[in-house]
Amino acid sequence: LRLKDLQEMVYEGFVSGDNDVYFLTSEKIKKLNLEQAVIKPVPKGRDVRSFRNNWNDRYVLFPYLNKKNKTEVIKLNDFPNVKKYFEEIKERLKTRKSLKGSSKNWYEMIRPREFDWYEQDKIICPSISDKNSFCVDFKENQSKKYFFVDHDCYGIILKDKNKKNYLYALSILNSKIA
Image (cartoon, rainbow, N blue to C red; front, top):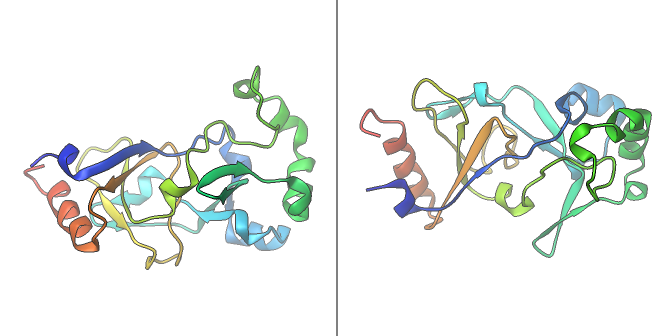
């Protein structure tokens, strides 16, 4: 049995272009009163271990919405507190080298990926690990939301969406035979 026979897709997580801006704690989110529609829980690669996600109250300010299964950048005027936060650091965001020559808005991420990749059951693994470190992401996790993964992690979506299949694949991926 090979992973490619079970998987629908494997993807690298988003690339923000400035993690210090986009990654926030719940304390900072509360202090800034940021709109919850664009706040998503995110593990880093070091948080993902065999069968568990040691998520550490880290969120990403993900300035996109899912509109008719399409990832669309938000209109800042619809999110006044996010707008205020971004405008305070506008010069920093505008001068990111990775945006040069791009048609992206100054507050966008470099590579956000597709919204619906994140908002479903998946297996998460770190991009670099010295052992098999796979965990499952069901919405019934500690954050009560699906995790969005950054480029420190990969997401694996299976063809058969049955939760038992995810647990079966997870047990093989974390085994010594994988």
